Image (cartoon, rainbow, N blue to C red):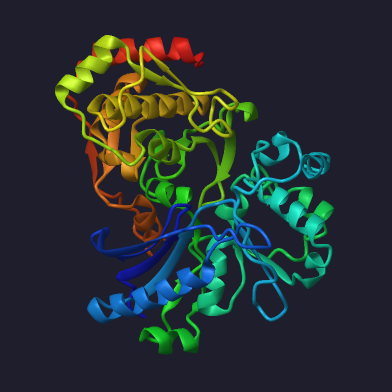
Length: 459
């Protein structure tokens, strides 16, 4: 069988649903289409519009195949998401939005059964960011749901199941702060048994395994050949990490940016000592290895502060911010990140919305938050930035200054898509990376960073 070249990547992020077509021979995106991932507020609870996404994906797959040819399909999605399937393979309940919050008595009851951080590497997170908390709340509010649930799959494999009819979970998604997995032993934690779902969770597999060929009805709807393979799929931050897992020989740090900024440290000698109170955690990469990680909602914070009025700063704007010590202090999103519970504030005055100085101060803030996360996970080696922030020169300049290590960027539009496509490749070659160069004075950037750290109480 000829190795696939054109990989269609289903990429469901928290903000947008995408389909990208990746040329595996050049690691470039040939086409990308998106639609907003708008949470449905209708009963029984906030949930994802999976049927709308499905219609969009089938149309896009058909168009990509007509225009370019689709040889294989990979799937990557945001974490903290699971699908409960009934005996027919349909959803037993809508797929719950992880930002939905639960009553205090339900939270307290879950805390009583939640395994220790030492076992799972999963800190206590808000709402349903721990999948175990989602399952506990769902079964508490609907006592019949557990009996109706035949299988539980993580989110990439929900789409894989719709494509192939085969169920699975993948190790990166089940190992993504779910409370369900022990990343140190590569086995389930104590929680699935406590919840009574140990035998309902679909088999845990590596992301690069082949789930199966597409179903006949998918081939008919899209025009794809009937034996088009679909791989198991991968958690999106781990998709960004994957090209570097297979290509980096020494220590390196990867920063995956989007709604969430996820910082992951690839360093020999084991994971750093992590502080769960600062939103550090242990992820599991595509090779089933534990990865020290930290995160904050950088993309969400960017949107909140910019108020839809983003303006590129001029050199004069940048120097005015640096010389005037105008800075944003944590946290914009108080429920996540290394400064949880802290309310944001402006130091030396708040720049006007839609101004270049506001953009500059925000970019510096996001870089300093990223730098804090890198320190918390023992980041070492070059820092590789993936996603939208890789195109923000002010963010990159401050990150270089605060880490005093090289900062590299990926030329790809979406690092997640390239990593997900590479699950079909046996080659261990890296994507093309560019080293960041800046004309901003490093001494001023570092002085600004030192002041920010002192005011923020960063460690």
